Length: 485
Image (cartoon, rainbow, N blue to C red):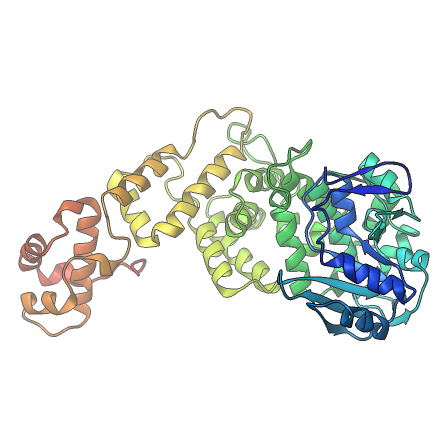
């Protein structure tokens, strides 16, 4: 661990724990009558022996005093970030690193939990600053340069017991800022902590506050929850972080406000000979087995959200992939995901039932992969693997997607083109051989050649393809494959 508790008040720092450029700043600020503290997640993570991220600084020094202290330290500059919140960025030129500084403050919020405080009062005490924060594990202060820990709300004890607890009455803290509901879930997932019962009850009571939060902020927290296992690489967990986060969203009644399409899957039974879980739990487990990539996790989590709709409208889950794709496009659009992510996730979901029984011919599988392109094909294989493993994780041995993974690897090794432009002759050559002008027939002929070389990669050379074109009949070129790119 980078830091270890010596007693309740002091922490010994490893030499490399804190960037050395902060120490002259601490001395300069102390000379002006203000101690400098590291606060928040950095202190928490160091106490837990976890790799720490960005450094947040805090002090009673107002902006002008901090600027004066910075001016006394060569290589440091300061940039105003938010005048109302009293936050500044301190930058170190040599290492090109920065830390965010905030003046001790008090905050008050209007009803509705819309995230930003309505009134900010600078010049508060350390204890008042601690109480305006969200959770006790984020409200510990480490003085620089000496390493004395000030812990007014018991955050160190909560770190030891692996508990997330609010800094004040849970109802007050969570009602102030609805985004704290998702931050609560994210912290529980990445830290492998439990939520204090009083905090959990308050979260459930205030779940509807998520409706007041900007979609972009909801998306940001969802991203981090789905990738919770990447926050501290190499760490072992008692509870898989992704499942921990998703189950917590469900248990705190937050899921129905964040992803109502997914929440609707709760309790929807599936065939026991194929599934160990209902639709919601299956989606959770599929997400667990998906690679640590946002597109993969989103596709796995949402691939079956159309099942309740299909069952309600048709009395069967057949065709749910199409319903799922439409619901996914709507959900990700509502959360303001970027266009590329929405299109890729929707595409994977729409096609996740291809070759569901694993009986498709080799030629059919190869053409399917070629049309979607290798990047998407790899993600499709990952989704199918996650789908299988998320259905009956305790009963599956080996790789359930082996057939597709091996065929895809073989295609890449053989140099099979995954775009029509990979065919060895171009449209002008085809037009000349067909004795026609470039147009729809030429495009159809090139697609026919592409499909041929997908299954006969050694034929992808000029001589062989010219022979194929010469033997083509007009009626063969009447229709184009709508899936071809």
